[in-house]
Amino acid sequence: MSANVLGVVVDENNRVLEVEPDNAAAKGGVQVGDLLDSLDGISFQDKVSVKARIQGQNEGAIFKLMVQRNDQSIILEIGPMPPVARFNAPTPTPVFAPQDYF
Image (cartoon, rainbow, N blue to C red; front, side):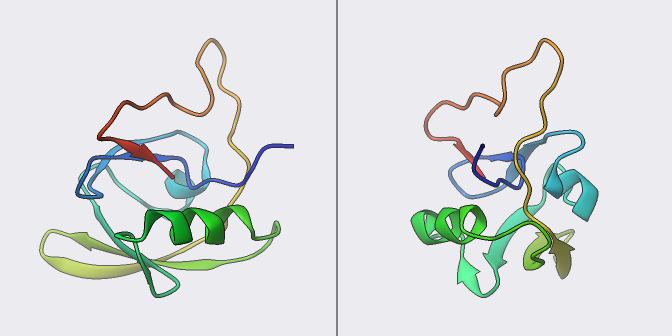
């Protein structure tokens, strides 16, 4: 069983570079270009704690994800889920420093 993810690739500033189709972030409304601010009040600057929070939740849990979009703060409700398998594509999406995957 895979650990839960949101299904996004971010740059070193936590700006979304890619949203994996059919994953939690896509279903919750995250868009390329969003700046990830916090997850249930945990800053994305603390990547280890955010990943632990995502991976440690059971199916059916709902997170409050705060993003910055077009100079506005938006709160999205997202449920974590295991990575969705994609035909002929690696899962999760491979990333290279300084990018990160949530």
